[in-house]
Length: 275
Figure 1 (tube, rainbow, N blue to C red):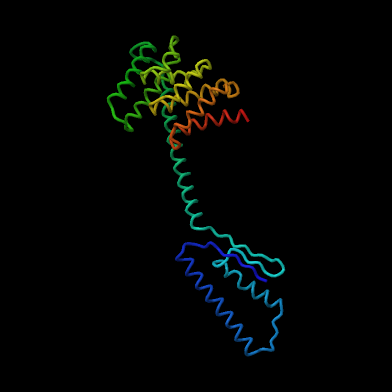
Figure 2 (cartoon, helix red, strand yellow):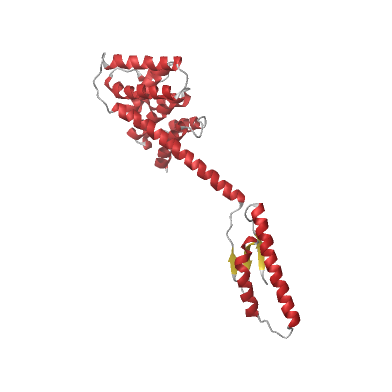
């Protein structure tokens, strides 16, 4: 006995036309066999002939059935994607393309910072401490006076890059006070210092600052600073409470943001070490 299972098919209009054509062909063939049998009743049709006839029409049945099982256990399986599956694959492909573009943007941002920090270390117009103070003030004023725009972001990146280059040269920075500061420029200065010169003793305070940071730009670099400290001391030396605090903070970060991608990377390193 031939067993047939219904196929999900292609889009409705196309699938319907195909089914009608295939069904018509099968019906005509069946009528033809009936007429042949009526006019030649003595003609013998053995089992092998029936099986060969079934095999002959199998390729045409893919639009009607998912699978066909012939006598003896022979089975033909038709692999078809439903319209919903196709839409899902398209959606996933678009998401992957979007993720790749956003990751490229993150890489470009970090490359711009690296380019500035690789420049000359000659300080014009004052000592490193004085220059850091000027940059801290410039960042605060930039955030206060200019609306969000690509131009402002670019200028912020330049300031941060200069802070990364200069803060390691300032010996008496009070990071414990700077990290919880109410001033965004002061906090950014602390992130830059720990990004450039990771110090384990400030990790808990840095994680708390990163999790509670209310400026997206600052939080992005705060998370990078956390990653730098984790890499410097080794994921295995980060206590469980700090990891939990970081993971709780992750739930508050938009999933498609550069901050979330950076934080996922840090947590992945911590989880891999734990495994």
